[in-house]
Length: 474
Image (cartoon, rainbow, N blue to C red; front, side, top):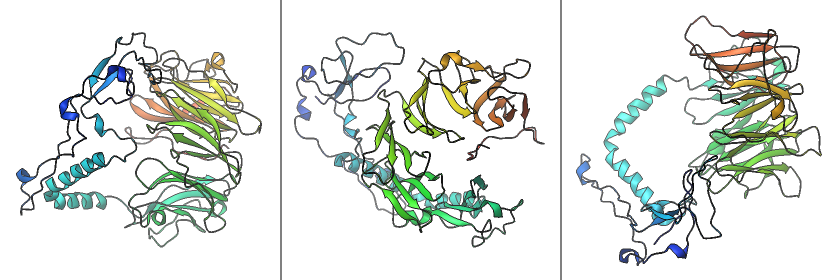
């Protein structure tokens, strides 16, 4: 019998255990047979009837074990966060005839050959559609302005933006001196013309992709001094990234790169140019660890956080005022946030509020207070709350109200909150009201209160509006 292990939210599974092995089926005593061959016709006209699909073989006696397992080395997977149901005892075998196709490392030759055969079958079966595909592609492309640029966003002494060019597949990242930016951008639309005076290339992804079959960018982030650039890139399509740090002041010379280091793609700069934070993934490609890397140091990268519960994925961020690194671990129903004080070199990671079943929350920092979007209390939508910026502060959360004591976002169905951005003098909230996307400006001199709330209005009754990334607190 073939026994495999898979993750599930409702059952417990084990790796191989001799206690549950029945007699082997005679048809599987021999080594695994090759996958069914694919017969392709080369006749003119693409006769679909003569094109035979690859058929994956079945291992009829292959099972996974579900229930209470006697193997002490078995990894038990919780049914759900709050399940009180008993596990099956004794366990039962769940049929898994195609389990042999499961190959997380993408190295099994038989599996790879089968996937290639499926791709070949698809190509042969649909080759008569090549003309239609080209026509549709050209039609869609004709409605896109290929040579274009994104809105320049300020960060320190520069503004940053990206450009795309007709005939090129990838984005090119630019920056220009902030002091030279005109009130109105007057660009002639030509690829060879600069969008802004003094613009310079930060990174050309087209150059990175040269000679490669695949190239997908992860993070692209300049350092606090804006002299270095950290980026992550996937060259294989396996959804794991390399991390690179280059010197923007010295023709992009590599400052830091470990070819053995594989990360999920997230990169955050610390307080200065010497420190980076990044996340790693487990075998299931789940981001679960957060590391701190000191550039130029001989020490191993420091593990700051690890989420062992496979229901939870880990992400990292940075407060807009640059005071805190945030580490969030969340499932579909429950989340938990941690913070690291960047102004205290001896500080460790602290928890904002411990996990509570089916409570989601997200945190921003503003002038000594957490601004929290949460469904605490079981509300159908997110509510907006604040508390002093302390660890384990769940008992201090309170709803944000206006001057009359009315809750601005109470989590009801009348007004939905998607998220907030906290600035020095105000907070910007995005959500929906009356079925229409809305953006509200919440202004106050108090760090945790609101004096006025104004909604952005537009001439068209039906419209779409939302928030985008920003790099400055003030």
